[in-house]
Structures are given as C-alpha cells and as structure tokens.
Amino acid sequence: MAFGRDHELHTRRFGRNLGLGLVLAAFVALVFGLTIVKVSQGNPMQAYDHAPRPELVQPEVGQ
Amino acid sequence: MTDLTALDQSPEAQFGDYVALLKPRVMSLVVFTALVGLLVAPVQVHPLVAFTSILFIALGGGASGALNMWYDADIDRVMNRTRGRPVPAGKIAAGDALGLGLVLSGISVVMLGLAANWFAAAFLAFTIFFYAVVYTMWLKRSTPQNIVIGGAAGAFPPMIGWAVATGGVSAESVLMFALIFMWTPPHFWALALFMKEDYANAGVPMLTVTHGRKVTRNHILAYTLALAPVGLGLGFTSIGGPIYMAVALVLNAGFIRGAWRIRARSEETAIADGYAVEKAFFRFSLAYLFLHFGALLAEAALRPYGLGGW
Image 1: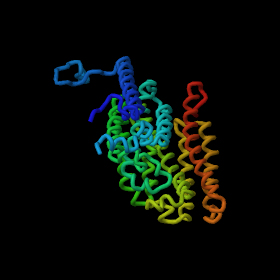
Image 2: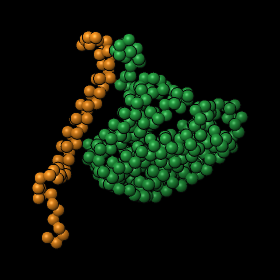
Image 3: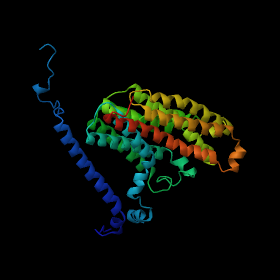
Image 4: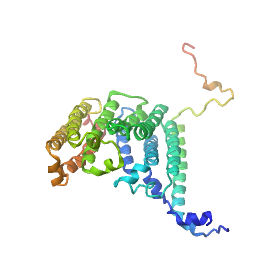
C-alpha cells in the first residue's frame, strides 16, 4: 500500500510530531547552555579515556 | 484490514495525552517544593544549573507518574476520579506508558547527575523507585498504611533540591521532608472521606475502607497534631525566621481546628451538608503546604536585605 506524503495520518499526527520536535530542540539547547556554564565555571572537562592524561592525576599531599 | 486502517480507527494519542501521563498537577507540587529546597540552601547555584535540575527532578516525578499509570490501569478504570487518564481511556497503550516511564526515568537521573551532582541523581532514582515500586506495586493494594509510607515519595523533592545545591543532607532538608511526609495522610484521608465509593469499588485498602470512617477521622486529628511540631520546628532552623514562624503558627492552628471539627462530626452530619467541612479541610491542606514553603522562600528572599531569618 502506498504511503503517500500527504496521508491523513500525517496531518493527524502533526501536533504530536511538532511537540516532540520542539522538546528535542529544547533539550539540545539546554545541553549546549549547560556545557557553556560548566566550561565557564572551570569545571574539569576531561576524564580518563584510555589515554595517559597526567594533568588529571591528583598531586599527593606534601609534594 | 491492513495495519494502516487499523491505526486509522484507533483513537490517536496527542502530545497532550503523553503530558497527562506525567501527572502535571503532581509535578507542579514537585517543582515548587524542590525549587524551595534548592533556593533556601546556603549554597548558590548557577541559574541555568538550577533550572535544569528542577526540570529533570520534575521529569523524574513525571516518569514515576507514567509508571504508576501503567501499573494501576486496572484500578484507574474503576475509579471515577481516574478513568479519564490516558491509559484507561484507551488513548495510550499500557506498554507505551511503561516505556515512556522507564526512558524518562533514565534520562532524568542521568541529566540531574550531569547538571548537578550524583548524590542528587541517586536520590532522584531512589524517589522514582519508591513511588513506582514501593508505593504503587507493594503498598497501595496491600495495606491501609499505603499513603502514610508512600507519602515519602512526594516528600523527597525538597531534599533533592537541597542536595542539588549542597551535595548532601541536613537537619533543614530532613525537616522539609518531614513536613510533607506528615502532611500527606490527613490530606489524602480527607479526600478519601468525601470520595467515598471510589476506593472501595477499586479494592484499594484505604483507611476509610478497612477501618471505617470514624477511625479515619481520629487518624486525621492524630496526624495533624503530630504535624504541628514539625511545621513549627522547621522555623527554628537556619532557614526559618519570624515570617515563617508567624505563618506556621496560624496555619497549624487552623489545620488542627479543621481536624478537630472533622473528628467531632458524625457521618450523618457530613452527608447532610455534602462533606462541607472535609472538603474545606482538603482545600486548606493545599494552602497549608503552599504557604509553609512560600514562607521559607520569603525568608530566603529577604535575607540579603538583612530582613529574613533569625
């Protein structure tokens, strides 16, 4: 059965799809904004990723 | 009949039906109390981090609401108050509600951990577990203590808000929890008194069904009396102050008076006036909680001007 672009299903589900689209766009914007805040606050942005990262090693007390 | 025509004939769930699955009215209480918990904490949080945290605490609460609607679809179908919910109304399949609840639980916990801290995230995960599993699956259908213990799930949000800011727990956050925890039973039992047939028809062992209405009236007064020291005690902590104390004194006196009137009434008198006192007490209970937390917020807002707090 042909599933035409203008099938009635598309119009019926438009509101639902639009809502989900807006939620996803808002989520992306939120994660972006959160990243900017975290970076500008100087939070550590690196983690162990199976490559040596000496700057992540905490200096021992007394050194 | 093809699959597509079958789809055409089924009622189409709209975006709003999925929102309804998240119990937006309960969510508003979660947002408000969690926000107060976060704002009265002694640690400043960046506004976007605070906004994100509250959003995902609310989403976690919504996810537990969806899980509740998935599990309780059978009894929701029987009760007048709940039969219009998306699953019993046939708009959303029970399995879809389960899927949405699980996915949103995961997203909300992970996002709260990334935005704030993992202690707050673990707390949120425990809250979702408590509401969906401990309350909905274990307690609700098995004991009249269901809403007493289950009320803890609704009482955790201010503690999570506090944990977002401070990364931990304190006397203040425990007392905010205790305030909602002790408030929940009289609030729901007042509702159960005037929604009389609903819980009995659904076979939910509400106190009114298992122990009778006289016992329920006595319990409302007992819990209201036990609630007062918690409400007033919060005023003596670092987040309290004269405004809060004045508000708490008036509200607790009013709440005890209402509970006393409920206890003094017979069922015949209540039926005669259409449960007027019970309904008024229920409405007052909503204002009670809102104003206690509003007063805490006022104390915090005035503190920078040297007015709030002790």
